[in-house]
Length: 303
Image (cartoon, rainbow, N blue to C red; front, side, top):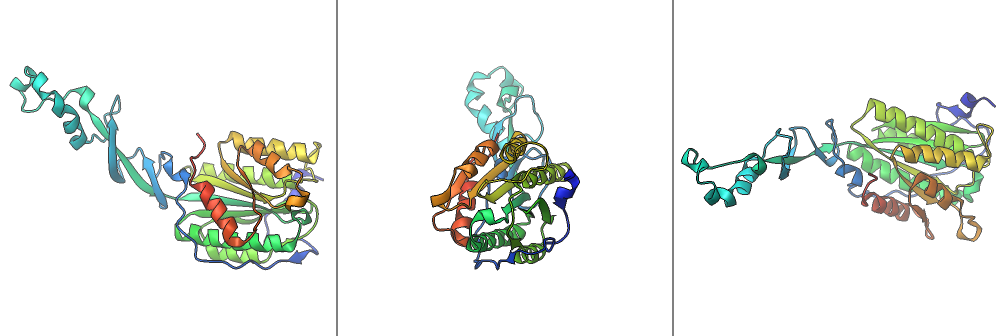
C-alpha cells in the first residue's frame, strides 16, 4: 500500500460497513484555562490570558529590565530606586530623584490568545465496545463547545481499518465538529501509526501558519496498533511517530480506552513515547473524561 493511500481528507463517511455510534450526553462545559496560556508568545491572539513580549496587553507585574529597555515600568522603577536615594547624594545635587540602570524594571503583560486542541481518536474494534466511543464523543463535544466559546481552534483525526482520516481540519466552528463526530463508524483494524503520523503533519502545518497557537494533542486509544504504513512492525512504527511528536515539545494526553481486565500496557507505552500522561478511567463517562482532560491541562506545560 502506498503511503498516500493511508490518509484521506473527505467527510466521515469514507468506510464501507461498520456501525455508527451516537454521541454520549453532553453538558455545560467549564472554563478551560490551560498551561499553554503560561507561555510567552510573539503574536497576538484571542483566547486565554498569556504572557507576551509585545507592548500590548494588561500590565500585571514587573521584572528587572536587564539589557531589555523596552516597555519600562516607571512605577516599579521608582519603587526599586527609592531605598537608595539617601546613598546617592552626589546625583541628587542635580536631580530630584536618582535612577540608575540597575533600578530599571520592565512590564510583564498578559493578553488573550487562542489554542489548538487536536483530537486523535481510535475508531477500531480494539477500543472494545461501542459504549466507550459513545462516552468519548460526548466528552469531545463538550470540549469542542468550550473551545469554540473561547475561540480555540479544534481538529479531529480518526483512524480505523487501514488509514487515518482528517475528519475535521482545525477550525473554530463547533457546528462542523458536531456533524463530523455524529457520523463516525467503528470497527476494523487499528492503524495507530497512520493516526500519529497524520497528527504530526497537522500539528506541524498549524504551527507554521498559526505560530501564535500552542497545540494540545488528545489521543484516545488502547495503544494496540496492528497496521503499518511502512515496513516497520506496527507498534515500533507507532512509537517512532510518537517520539516525533514529543520532540516537537507538543503537549499530549493519552486516554487508555482498553478495559482493565484486558489491558496489556500498550497505551502507557505510547504515552511514554509521547512523554505524556496516561489515564485509565474506570467510570468512562463523558463528564469524567472531560474532567480528566481539563485537570491535565492545568498542569505545567512542556519546556
